[in-house]
Image 1 (tube, rainbow, N blue to C red):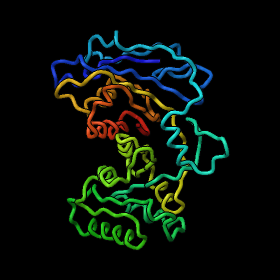
Image 2 (image 1 turned 135 degrees about the horizontal axis):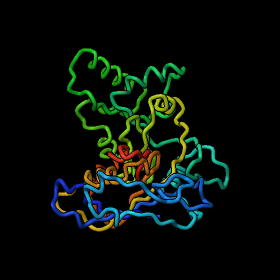
Image 3 (image 1 turned 120 degrees about the vertical axis):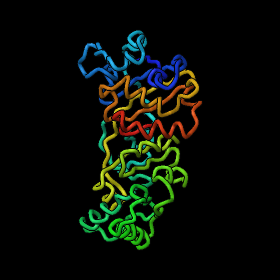
Image 4 (image 1 turned 60 degrees about the horizontal axis):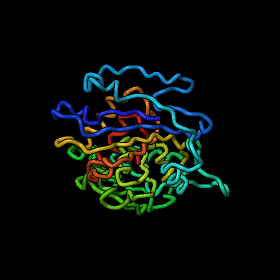
Length: 303
């Protein structure tokens, strides 16, 4: 099951040539091991896709480069998302494997909150918690409203810092940097681990091989109190980027291209695993940009 597209087409407004990169996308779901499926086709569909006039305007010959083909049923191996999720799963029975669609209890390596820490604290106290289950797990990094020097915001920042000082968890004050970058730079997001954040851009950690995914504030409070929460392992979409990007085309153009050319919820609530020689050739900062923005494509995680 694959689609072919000219990745550089979405950057046509920035460069004159869009000939160097292509991508093939495939999807797998452990819930459908006995049947074939295609990323853009709902279960039971005949495999005919609807046209995308906006994408065709960017790349007139897109219709020739984008199509369906069905693959064989998925084999017994796990995806990278499933392997990392299993590493952080709690309470699995002997011999049990995590598969897409499974509801599991997870204990992530870290839980990141930023300015919204001020909203998580009352939720934490509201469930009767008085101490962090694992003080090494929460990471606070203030970054959203740092230009606001008003009394109310300064009081919130002070209360967050005091909470961290009281409970002994990591705290990065306003001015240190964007929270997601801080987690990467400080080694909190690490390849092969799972890190969650109370922010939609937590997918970004996938740029260094860390399974990052967003959680809501209530989940963040629960993790503070118990060190774990529940998670449903998502279906996995594979995106293979081939070739080389033309001069002037950057990582952001790649994810914008994918959003434009596959904008019919093809990867909604999926985890996306990127592969291909183009991916291996990209600098880390380009990868971080792709994964950071993959949430806008509808993805719950990226690797």
